[in-house]
Length: 409
Image 1 (cartoon, rainbow, N blue to C red):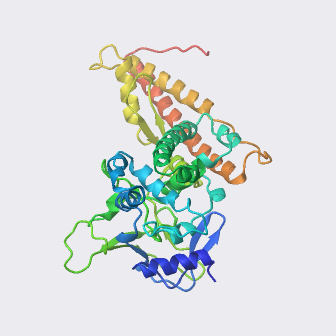
Image 2 (image 1 turned 180 degrees about the vertical axis):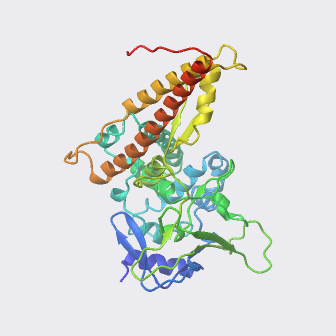
Image 3 (image 1 turned 90 degrees about the vertical axis):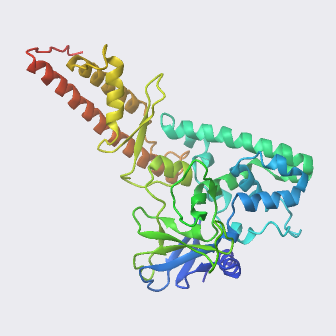
């Protein structure tokens, strides 16, 4: 039997034109919902759908905030970012006492009640100071500090504005609630490009994150074959029609007791940890970003190591006296610099905390373990790649009759 919050979500979603496959049971644990098959679900079945009218997006949020704050606030609200608008819309569901009726424009309380509680969220912004410190020396550490500063500034701006509307509302518009709403958006959002007649998960310069109640109940499985499908009423020609629906279709058979999955796309562990609060072991999509001092170029290096050629060519051009005529001496110098750079990057990675460290929760330690495994694998293969470049430069010198001699130091 489904928990009351998930049963309420199903009723609410279907009331407004959504759909959850009748063989899907929503199971709730401390980390959120899982979709479990209660009978065999055939391949190519629609698992869940949501009408555009239930999307928590820019239009929905701006409409509700203007209705609550007054039409005169529209100009000010239009200066807010999409995240500020959406997260404030979510937060407003929580500022009214349980004994008070919630305004009709705040339509998503049944959905929000089905989401994990604040203490179950586990992105780096929910890490303790000791847990975040364990990531020092990684890209995740700096990205988390930057995100904390950015979101805090957004919240302060919104709270100051809300105070001009209602001091009581501003008092209840807390940082903890804004962080919770922002984390929901981070962990459950889809790009607004899904709302077009040709839905795609590819982001663009004009797309923004938004939420699709119900559609986000499916957890991630890399490579899971699924399709996104939009259905419009007959005769509809509008680019955005709120009566249209978006559905997830699973192309594999799901047996009784198995979980039904979505596919979030190819994501490295740093993105999964920062954006979603989980990681994958031996993630083939792991990557590392390297940048030379004083350069605007950022080179994303994957496993094997894919993407290394751009970094190699940039360093070769930098060390060469004549970039148009690069010789073995330039290649040797470039390779040595890059081997040292990669080794230094590897040396800066933190050690994995002891399993018995009471200051680090097991789930956080596991994320760090998966992340470090990927980073060290990439850096090791990258170092080997540049060492082979060194060997090739030595061979090129030998072909010209020059035998290079190296100090042991």
